[in-house]
Length: 352
Image 1 (tube, rainbow, N blue to C red):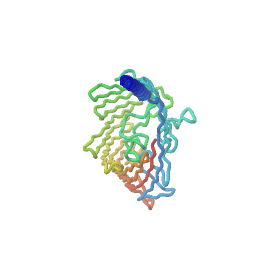
Image 2: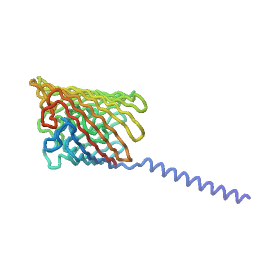
Image 3: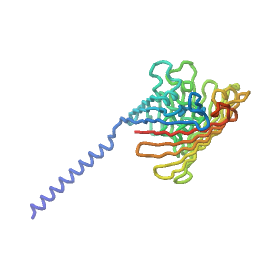
Image 4: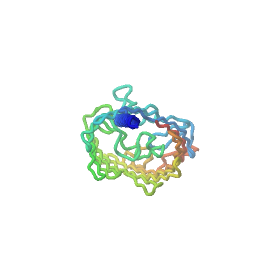
């Protein structure tokens, strides 16, 4: 009997040791997560006008992206990242029409400059301070370049005429109690490969619980921007973006506000409306393509209704958009000037 007891004790002891080793191995495996990651997206769409031609006279809203007629390409977005305990990097490359439009000011030096969306290194100096050095997407605005992170597939005027990207050094601070801050010194807006002017821009951000007040000053111009959102219920979300841009000495300006109500119909389907009012002053009326009067002032009201259906990693987005300008900024099917444009699109986005 004693021998049996000792045998059982030996078995139990061996099992306990084996379990501890196994648990320790699993714990080490959990702690030693892969530091390299590879992600991205691919998107394409179909777009057609309802109140304007779809042939060689085809026109589109004056905002960026999703402006090509018929079956059209978005972009392939490839993101490689390394996340260490203290340091890391992000290399974000874009290929296709959407990517080319996003980095429009980049191909100044190298033939491949127009594929770099973001390229930066970072250092977590402490739990509360992170330094980022290189090319990063703008901190202003509600919408972003990647279609995966936007609810609407087409983009707003506010996003289209604000900055897309910056190159420089920024410091992010966690101030505690849901407060954050950021300070940055950068090349002039959208000059992301190098600095050809010798001028520099400064940026700042103050955040509280997901609401952000942003500011950037670049080459005698400034923009102030508020971006935020609120969960009004478990299924209903309201996003908000408002901004004002001005060039000193009456060199031009724009002001706009956009609301983003979104409702989750089910776990796999949501509806979202973007309602935006955007107006320009001085020469910006002509530059934005929204139409302007003799003094260069113009405005547009844009309503975009989007459905978002998720099938695994694939997102399908049907969309209808109505743009109404204060001036004759568009044409109708008879090629006559008109103040409004109605269009539809269907987008497919795969993310990995």
